Length: 293
Image (tube, rainbow, N blue to C red; front, side):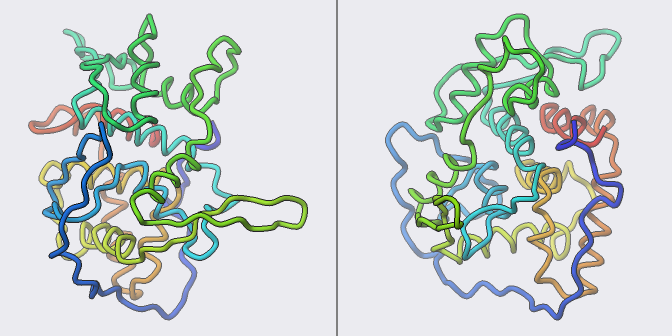
């Protein structure tokens, strides 16, 4: 599948440019936490940003991919669709809704094990609940790779096209509008009008970029099992969605080279071996395996 093929260089080459380091001077730590929407489940974040607006993995990846002023993702990005579906599987697993079936005595590989519904309790997120409903009601169960393809609509079986989640980027953008991160505008592209979602709260995106940068620079621990699982997933899925470059573009050249070196170290890890370690999440590494195999 073209959108899931890993680039041989790992990431798109960075354009050489004089750049600046990002500083966070917004001073919003003291703000009171906004009330969650009715029925919305809070996303647990172990990074210590408990007072900040909480975003799902899907929203974070989309936000990294959105052009700030234009309010849309690159027309040439054919990876983000499947990347967002991978985000959903990991998000549901981190929330205790999904798990992989037992590996068995012969220890079947991550990509051959089926995805099982662990709990069908609503998450409060419409997209996640829609994906969870599909997975729960499907018998026999499907693998991680199959679910990424089915939820993306990339299947040759016409009887399974109903699994496709439609307008995912637009629905995620509307979530970000509700959270005060984006706004909504109409732009004219000669032959048609398009709804766009320019950035309105730059501090949230800058904190997200800073978090990704620090994970591979100042706070690098050289062991994914010692990193926050959500942050590990964000780095892998941002790479698979071809938007990780956007977080590193503002770095100075030496910082960029070091960040890229450490990202490559993560990409070279063996998902099967990592999934067998203590305090790990098998679904996370199964999704990584689906994009890096």
